Each structure stands twice: as structure tokens, then as C-alpha cells.
Image (cartoon, rainbow over all chains, first blue to last red; front, side, top):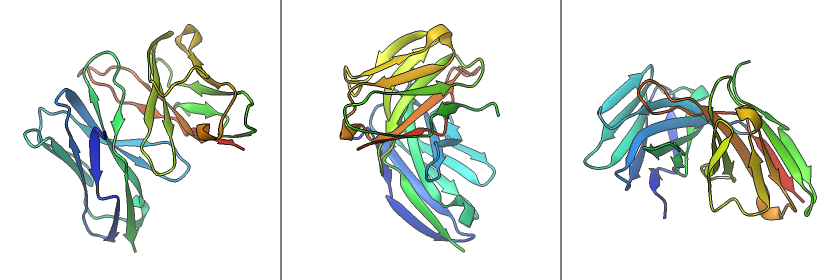
Length: 113
Length: 116
């Protein structure tokens, strides 16, 4: 059973538009929610992360919105650029010594010029 | 470059052969993770080290897989008697707890394994 559900599977956005990717989780023990960007043949790169004690975090063009009661969080990419074309993964980890990440299945984003 | 490094980047082997991958974490990061990623999927946790101690292994890590982290520095992941189902990208990540108590995992470029 997928513990972190991500949608959509793929997304096409025009340059300058807003890209929105959503994730939902079930385990209320999760307390850390990062987003990673991955280009083909490369390892995932940490973009931005949030903890459940805040509802929004913004870093440059990237914003995470977090809804603890709905157990959902989303990534917004403002002013999307062709260079943002990549696969985006949401993830979650729970408290404790081992902070292993539980991942969504990924969203393939294509930004058209 | 002070990021996580992995070697080799690519490995092609025949079924039944043994392979070993190496991960060099970010200096002074005491936590090290191995993940496996197949095409079109998110990474899946394999194992976790804190310093030299291997503290958790996923059920995905069959008896053919072994990982070590001698002296709490670099780590190796060995797969014995490789099978075609082992073909995947093997990712290593390292982290050190921040002041907030959560940690940020930084990934290496991965080792792409192809078993023929």
C-alpha cells in the first residue's frame, strides 16, 4: 500500500505558468515532508521541505502548502521555466532514529517554452 | 566537490556475478542511507547506518545483499549472485541531524546496475 500518494503522474505547463503537484499521506507519525527534483540519470536533489507545525514555506519560486488536518501537502512552482522540466518526488519521514524517506511515485513535469 | 559521491556510476554484469558499490558521504555526516530506484518509481529504502552501526535493513534487502560502513566513513553495498531483477539505480544519501531534530538527506548521483 502506497503510504504517500502523489498526483498527477505527469504535468505539462507553459513557460511562466504555475505548476502544482499534490501529495497525501496516511501515517500521522510522519513529521517531515521534503520535495525532491530529479533529472534523468541523476540522483534526487532536495528542493524544499516542511514540518507540520507550519502551513506554508516559500523558497524562491518554490512553495510548499501543508494541510495537517487533511493530511495533504503540495508543491507550487511559480513562473515555471523549461529548466524546471524534471521528475518531482514528494516524501515523508517519521520521528525516531532512522529518518528513512517514504516516497511518492513521482510527477514528470514538462514546461513548454 | 563536497557532495555525496558514488562509484561506479554504471555497472553492467552478467547474471550470477557479484558486484560492489561504494558511497562516500558528505564529510562529517554520521547518517548514511541506501535506496534502490527502478524506472518510473520513487526510491525505496534499503538500509541505514548511524556511524558504523547498521541500524535497520529493509525486507527488500535479501540475503544476497550486504552493506558495510567501516569506521563510519564510506559505505559499500555488495550484491552476490546478481539476478535480472536487481537491475536498478542504487542511491546513497547522507545526513546529519539539524538543530531542529529532523534531517535533510543529500543524495549522490547513483550507480546504475544492469544485469544481463
